[in-house]
Amino acid sequence: MDIQKLKKEYDNLLKNEDFDRLDSELKIPNIFKILKVSRTEIRHSNFFSWLLDPKDTHKLGDIFLKRFLRKVFSSNRFEKVNPEDVEGMDFSKVEVRREWKNIDLLIILELEKVVVCVENKVYSSESERQLIVYKKVIQEEFPEPPWVHTFVFLTPEGIESKNEKGSFEPISYEFIVESLKIIISENGDSMVPQVKTYITDYITTVKREIMGTDELLLDLSNKIYKNHQELIDFVYKNRPDNGVKVSQLMKEELEKRDWFLGSETKNYVRFLTPRIKDLIYINKEIENGWNKKESLLFEIELQPQTNKIIFKTVIPQTDKKYNVERLKSFMKDSKSGDKDKKTTSKNFFIYHKLEEKFVYEIEDQELRKSINDFYDKITDTVSKVENKLLEHSEELMKMKSV
Picture (cartoon, rainbow, N blue to C red):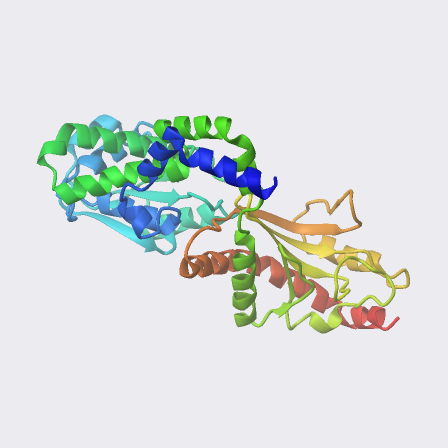
């Protein structure tokens, strides 16, 4: 698109009444947007904790807690408590814990001897054994009997847990939004004004930022895109790349762990650890697409367009004289039974693949936390690869000397 056409299209957009309405809607003050926490998982859990605690400053008592518990106990997974039992429960000694033993939310009904474990997943996905560990913790700390255990998997779409379908009840953010709308409708006149504003802002935030169900904004956006598609496509194509900032922060946090940065590109962060760095063969002849020509690297692929991040252990093409098949056999032994995959475009062999949702458009402090949370998740795999290679260190050093 040439500069004159770009200016003309932009002028037409500014004169569009739908654009003015959309701009006005987005500029309405929202406390979660002002604080830049709308896309931060931990902040959503904090807000739920505040709402669930009858003794907290919202002055709503147990209204939200009761609605939430009725939803939980309506599940066939939990036969020992019925939703009808909620009204007769004594909440005078209820306790809501945050991040207790890494559990997002824990509701302890002391007098009823009921405990509700809530795992909240907004953008990240569950680790393989995460929920199993939480169940074990609950059993150890609140043994059955006398305690009754209930487990909740809270996500935007209300999806089932991949690993614990039978024990974790899926609940969606839509249920949270609808519950809050009912509470405002029924109690709005008597609510503390600031509390009503916070809850209203939260409803707006969830609908816009997480669920994508704000009808007004969706309608306006569709109209604007239809009338200015060429301009909007051009701007989108040339938008700033959030992956660059994340990549830089990942490198900084990687070095803090004493991991060594390997070959890299714009959307790929690759590394090795001190324990195996000297065991890795450096290619002398073949061009394998990596500027430092390593024969194995841990790789993190950044996908800011899809809000994803992908970890892999990768073996690229190597010199013919290097025994790469032997190296591949070590990787197979370090896996959990999954078959290795070979890409169709290049001869890269991929192991230990882990794909996660990742939010790129948040403040640096939160990004660093998300990065380190991801690093924590892959540390076990990194250690397994290290140990497997160290088992064959003498052989690897001989292979390297070719």
